Image 1 (tube, rainbow, N blue to C red):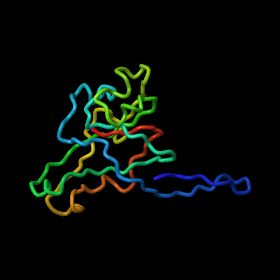
Image 2 (spheres, one colour):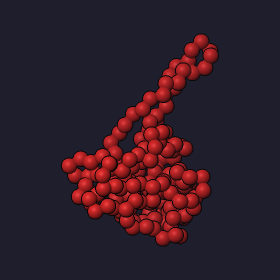
Image 3 (cartoon, helix red, strand yellow):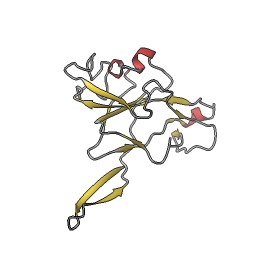
Image 4 (cartoon, rainbow, N blue to C red):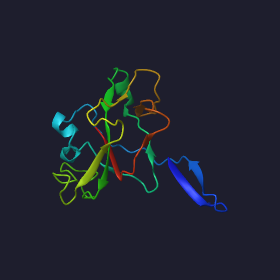
Amino acid sequence: MASVAQGSCGGSGSIVHLASTQGGWVEANTDLQTADSATNLLKPQLVTRAAVKWLEVPASATRILIRGRNLAVMSATGTPAAVISIWGAVGAPDRTLASTATTSPWGTTPSGTNGGVFMRLDNADSGATGLTLTFATTGNLEDGTYEYTDLVDLTGLDLKGCQFVTAW
Protein backbone atom coordinates (compact mmCIF):
# COMPACT_ATOMS: atom_id res chain seq x y z
CA MET A 1 0.00 0.00 0.00
CA ALA A 2 1.20 3.51 -0.62
CA SER A 3 0.21 7.04 0.32
CA VAL A 4 0.49 9.64 -2.39
CA ALA A 5 0.47 13.42 -1.83
CA GLN A 6 -0.79 15.46 -4.74
CA GLY A 7 -0.60 19.22 -5.34
CA SER A 8 -1.67 21.90 -2.93
CA CYS A 9 -4.97 23.60 -2.48
CA GLY A 10 -4.92 27.41 -2.09
CA GLY A 11 -2.31 27.42 0.65
CA SER A 12 -4.35 25.17 2.93
CA GLY A 13 -1.91 22.28 2.68
CA SER A 14 -1.53 19.22 0.52
CA ILE A 15 -4.36 16.97 -0.50
CA VAL A 16 -3.51 13.39 0.38
CA HIS A 17 -5.01 10.49 -1.54
CA LEU A 18 -4.73 7.11 0.15
CA ALA A 19 -4.44 4.27 -2.29
CA SER A 20 -3.82 0.57 -2.22
CA THR A 21 -1.64 -1.05 -4.83
CA GLN A 22 -0.47 -4.59 -5.18
CA GLY A 23 2.62 -6.03 -6.69
CA GLY A 24 3.14 -9.73 -6.95
CA TRP A 25 3.63 -11.79 -3.82
CA VAL A 26 7.33 -12.37 -3.16
CA GLU A 27 8.96 -14.99 -0.95
CA ALA A 28 11.16 -13.60 1.80
CA ASN A 29 11.82 -17.04 3.34
CA THR A 30 11.36 -20.35 1.55
CA ASP A 31 12.00 -22.52 4.64
CA LEU A 32 9.86 -21.62 7.66
CA GLN A 33 10.56 -25.01 9.27
CA THR A 34 14.21 -24.17 9.94
CA ALA A 35 14.83 -21.68 12.72
CA ASP A 36 17.89 -19.52 12.99
CA SER A 37 20.03 -19.65 16.12
CA ALA A 38 19.03 -17.46 19.05
CA THR A 39 22.17 -15.38 18.41
CA ASN A 40 21.21 -14.71 14.79
CA LEU A 41 17.63 -13.79 15.64
CA LEU A 42 18.88 -10.52 17.15
CA LYS A 43 21.76 -9.96 14.70
CA PRO A 44 20.19 -9.80 11.23
CA GLN A 45 23.55 -9.32 9.53
CA LEU A 46 24.49 -12.87 10.62
CA VAL A 47 21.53 -14.65 8.99
CA THR A 48 23.05 -16.36 5.96
CA ARG A 49 20.63 -19.14 5.08
CA ALA A 50 19.93 -19.30 1.34
CA ALA A 51 16.20 -19.58 2.17
CA VAL A 52 16.17 -16.07 3.71
CA LYS A 53 16.11 -13.27 1.16
CA TRP A 54 16.30 -9.52 1.73
CA LEU A 55 13.65 -8.04 -0.55
CA GLU A 56 14.09 -4.52 -1.85
CA VAL A 57 11.05 -2.36 -1.10
CA PRO A 58 9.57 -0.78 -4.24
CA ALA A 59 9.70 3.02 -4.46
CA SER A 60 6.81 4.69 -2.61
CA ALA A 61 5.74 1.48 -0.84
CA THR A 62 5.03 2.12 2.84
CA ARG A 63 3.26 -1.07 4.00
CA ILE A 64 3.43 -4.81 3.39
CA LEU A 65 0.95 -7.64 3.77
CA ILE A 66 2.15 -10.95 5.25
CA ARG A 67 0.93 -14.49 4.56
CA GLY A 68 2.45 -17.94 4.31
CA ARG A 69 2.21 -20.57 1.61
CA ASN A 70 3.04 -24.23 1.26
CA LEU A 71 2.29 -27.02 -1.16
CA ALA A 72 -1.45 -27.77 -1.13
CA VAL A 73 -0.76 -31.49 -0.65
CA MET A 74 0.99 -30.66 2.63
CA SER A 75 -2.12 -28.99 4.03
CA ALA A 76 -3.87 -32.36 4.19
CA THR A 77 -1.33 -33.51 6.78
CA GLY A 78 -2.00 -30.58 9.09
CA THR A 79 1.24 -28.64 8.65
CA PRO A 80 1.82 -26.77 11.93
CA ALA A 81 1.76 -23.03 12.33
CA ALA A 82 4.92 -21.02 11.70
CA VAL A 83 5.94 -18.13 13.93
CA ILE A 84 7.93 -15.47 12.09
CA SER A 85 9.44 -12.09 12.80
CA ILE A 86 9.60 -9.37 10.17
CA TRP A 87 12.78 -7.30 9.88
CA GLY A 88 13.52 -4.18 7.89
CA ALA A 89 16.81 -2.54 7.01
CA VAL A 90 18.15 0.73 5.73
CA GLY A 91 21.60 0.66 4.21
CA ALA A 92 23.68 -0.40 1.25
CA PRO A 93 23.76 -4.19 1.03
CA ASP A 94 25.68 -5.98 -1.68
CA ARG A 95 22.74 -6.22 -4.10
CA THR A 96 24.26 -9.23 -5.86
CA LEU A 97 23.91 -11.14 -2.57
CA ALA A 98 20.64 -9.70 -1.22
CA SER A 99 18.26 -12.20 -2.82
CA THR A 100 20.37 -15.34 -3.16
CA ALA A 101 23.05 -15.27 -0.52
CA THR A 102 24.51 -17.77 1.83
CA THR A 103 26.82 -14.88 2.66
CA SER A 104 25.23 -11.89 4.35
CA PRO A 105 24.62 -9.01 1.94
CA TRP A 106 25.22 -6.72 4.95
CA GLY A 107 28.73 -7.88 5.79
CA THR A 108 29.48 -9.31 9.21
CA THR A 109 29.00 -6.11 11.19
CA PRO A 110 26.42 -3.34 10.83
CA SER A 111 29.23 -0.77 10.55
CA GLY A 112 31.03 -2.60 7.72
CA THR A 113 31.17 -1.61 4.05
CA ASN A 114 27.68 -2.92 3.35
CA GLY A 115 26.40 -2.14 6.83
CA GLY A 116 22.73 -1.79 7.56
CA VAL A 117 20.55 -0.32 10.26
CA PHE A 118 17.99 -2.96 11.29
CA MET A 119 14.54 -2.68 12.82
CA ARG A 120 11.99 -5.26 13.88
CA LEU A 121 8.78 -4.31 12.04
CA ASP A 122 6.19 -6.61 13.64
CA ASN A 123 6.94 -5.74 17.28
CA ALA A 124 8.67 -2.92 19.18
CA ASP A 125 10.52 -5.57 21.24
CA SER A 126 13.27 -7.12 19.08
CA GLY A 127 13.17 -10.36 21.08
CA ALA A 128 9.38 -10.75 21.22
CA THR A 129 7.40 -13.67 19.87
CA GLY A 130 6.59 -13.13 16.21
CA LEU A 131 3.52 -13.39 14.01
CA THR A 132 1.74 -16.74 13.66
CA LEU A 133 0.95 -18.09 10.19
CA THR A 134 -1.57 -20.90 10.58
CA PHE A 135 -1.66 -23.64 7.99
CA ALA A 136 -4.98 -25.46 8.38
CA THR A 137 -6.27 -28.65 6.78
CA THR A 138 -9.44 -26.80 5.73
CA GLY A 139 -10.66 -23.24 5.44
CA ASN A 140 -7.61 -21.60 3.81
CA LEU A 141 -7.27 -20.31 0.27
CA GLU A 142 -5.86 -22.89 -2.14
CA ASP A 143 -5.02 -22.96 -5.82
CA GLY A 144 -3.88 -25.97 -7.83
CA THR A 145 -0.42 -25.94 -6.28
CA TYR A 146 -0.36 -24.00 -3.01
CA GLU A 147 -2.31 -23.41 0.18
CA TYR A 148 -2.08 -19.90 1.66
CA THR A 149 -2.51 -18.83 5.27
CA ASP A 150 -4.88 -16.01 6.05
CA LEU A 151 -3.31 -12.57 6.03
CA VAL A 152 -1.86 -11.51 9.38
CA ASP A 153 -4.12 -8.43 9.11
CA LEU A 154 -5.72 -6.27 6.45
CA THR A 155 -3.85 -3.08 7.35
CA GLY A 156 -0.37 -4.39 6.66
CA LEU A 157 2.85 -3.65 8.50
CA ASP A 158 4.31 -0.16 8.24
CA LEU A 159 7.79 -0.36 6.72
CA LYS A 160 8.94 2.66 8.76
CA GLY A 161 11.14 3.89 5.91
CA CYS A 162 13.04 0.61 5.51
CA GLN A 163 14.50 -0.07 2.08
CA PHE A 164 14.71 -3.85 2.52
CA VAL A 165 12.53 -6.39 4.33
CA THR A 166 12.73 -10.08 5.25
CA ALA A 167 11.16 -12.71 7.51
CA TRP A 168 12.47 -15.55 9.69
